[in-house]
Length: 372
Image (cartoon, rainbow, N blue to C red; front, side):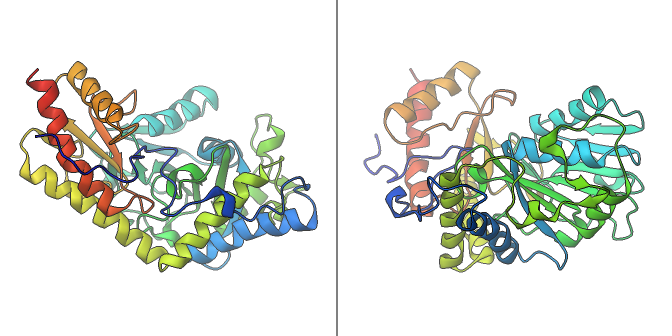
């Protein structure tokens, strides 16, 4: 039987992600629109984006937060172009975005002392084999595979190199070991359902020391430059952005931060995301035609929940289309480079009631496409 109850919000995309519950664009604080981002009011808004992020995440003393161009990709490439080359590099990849950083490091920067450790979708590389005398580049959560690192215990406290972490689908949803992370990047459109085009860059004091003591041998694009005269440009981390940001997007991000505070802060956001995963876990346990792409339970992502089905690629695509046509779930097909399957966002902006309503529709759609 076709289910009767549909999710009130059918937006389960893994990026851009669903807006927060109760979101109303007309309620944004828009006094910055039409003003320069370098005006006093513009700087205050951008400064809040940095300071409130640090406050909510509970970053250690001395960590800096900046708004940078070009989403998480821009933030990661800004970090790699500015910091890598001083030491050897260990790069870990287990899905498409991590593989992209391998390409950047080996084919664009063309670094020579590189160890790339790559695992198939659904698996993690051997974390115990990482050499922390090198700089280490990795994703905390594989957005396109649904596989995350279980914790930060594998990262050495006495590391000589820097840890550079792409955390775009982990921040505000997973318990991260900030003291073990020297560079962290993410984008607004993932974690809080924010608007695109802007990235966030978090630097530890160790990363700042590298920036001030090392000059890469390659030309540095203007939008990547974080130092002047051998010193960090501190303004970047107070809201004085390198390029012109969208103040509408800034207002949207500040709204998301305010919402995180209103629900009880970071711990509550993580709890909501973990509860969302539990709903899908219960459904998978009750149905033998669907399973997680992640092979080890401890590595199961609670944001980008990736699922495999006992169905061929055409049937999976038909199921995704059917759910969209019914207005039940939008944009839940697996990432284009990933194995055929379904990917459901489980971050805190998704309500548990909507996931609970979606699950019976998943069974119905599967039967429709496999028994046709």
